[in-house]
Length: 366
Image (cartoon, rainbow, N blue to C red; front, side, top):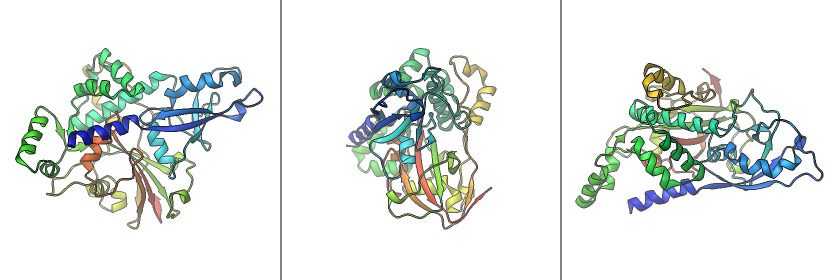
């Protein structure tokens, strides 16, 4: 039953898709009448630049001459291409919009807001670099990712692009990320002798970690709202705190819940800064690779994404309130075991992406 539940959750993540209605920006339309919007079903685990091979031919006859630099916006906000499409949707649409209306541009790339994305390779290396960060959190080093063969690296990326879960599991198992667990949950799921023995057999040779790679997207808002449709509109990335902060599972004789994790991950909200795990950023991974150059010899594109950085932390008052928390399009209760979320709703980059709306009466930058 537990295996079936895990398989069902994984399928949910990998088969999840968002219906998009993509419009060509009016300034780039050269034909009358204007071309109709393109209707595309975008994988949640995918990235917007990977849709270009479908979008560009659709609008090619209406484009002005010149060099194409493709980017997307939502209500005028340029969309960060390295954030998974599903995460962008969860973050920007408090009230889910279906189809999701986006605008595509082939000119005027906003280099002051978005890092360059030249082609599919840019997205691929962004993904590989996320794997390195996750490996560093899980193992304390990046060896398994850095030592991937070119064939495995190619198959892994193709599996992500094509949504092939079976192929992904086959290759990613070599990275030995294993599972996340805590003693209480293991006992809870293995209450009988037989199930305990079966769990021990299943876990044989499997690495278990208490450090969970998490990417937090925290939107601090001052307006209050009771219904999602009344949530304020999102108009600037400056309002988002983009945080890489591993969740350290604590053994306290009880289930480590999502609520416990949020208290640890966002001490700025819950007022316990001493409980925060140190942020693990691209800089730390880069420093590790500089000290271990031999690990970079078997893989290309080891440069970490320039814009994948944490924004400034915010000192929030104790009366701050979480208005919305969303993972993979789901709004889980805070009582749910955090290890279940990590083992079942993680993205292919081995990060758990969590979108949070926080209402704050006062906001002061540290």
